[in-house]
Image 1 (cartoon, one colour):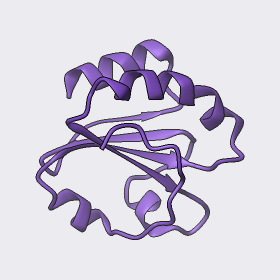
Image 2 (tube, one colour):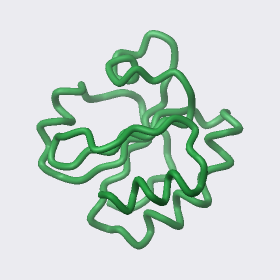
Image 3 (tube, helix red, strand yellow):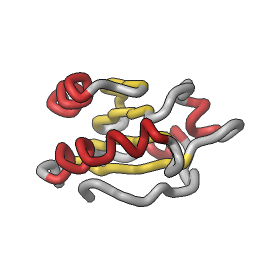
Length: 105
């Protein structure tokens, strides 16, 4: 599942996501967030060539347990998991930081 353009409601727990044996980018943010909007073209470009990476866009907000379990405070926030293990986490990354993190997956 390459780039996803829709923000989804929180439907899974952290333990459920970590139990998945796949490589994934979990993006926390909101559709109205200007920082989230600005990074979408780059993210779409980077993920379009990586069909083996799942992309989940989770609409985050105050009191949402999944985001809090990853200590999300700034958006966009990217959690990179490989076979359930946390590889990296980036808050409001630069283009270079995001490219490097995805290359490590």
